[in-house]
Image (tube, rainbow, N blue to C red; front, side):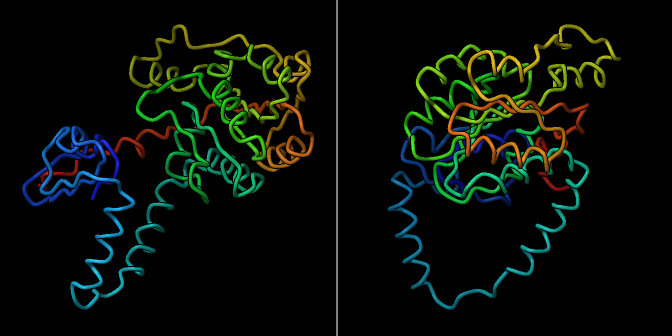
Length: 276
């Protein structure tokens, strides 16, 4: 059952076969048949359609046995399989613990952000702002300012890698000038880390154009009049976020990291259909 989604990953990467029935709900009729016509397509506002489906299920007869135990087992198995991504997970857990439930998290194409797509818990609607299918490297700082302007009473935190952060670093001046008290967390590995890993693993260690010469992000933030902090561990990151939230002004937190474990085998799962 796909609700308001392109259903891109499933059909294109995981595969399709006759045993798999797809039902789609979308307010845009053109989206219903994208990639693969579903067994059933319903055009409408998901709030209305899901309410009617829920009411219909209540009338459909006895409820099936609970699958809660099965679901918990699958979640535990998934958690074990991604445990090797612990550096990213620990940083995400620190962010989640420090950011209030209503706080807004602006994602980015970075090693921590990739893991955050599946690991970061979202407690309230419209508090997780991703780049969607666009893959807009470097967007998070600038986007966070718009998010903060639209939600002045809510904490707003963005993450970025060092490469992506430098795309719009000049907007720190905008943040300071207009009092947009966002928190920007920069995971600093001295490279376009995802690109560099691919060059090392897939192209025989032929590295080109992916190593970076960075400024001192703490001093850079301070030169704009923002608060500059540095955190080397998840615990230090949590404390820095709290300090930034209490400070009431734009904050940049530099987080030096080494090479992080590869999240892509978990994100881009292999083809699983048709069954062998």
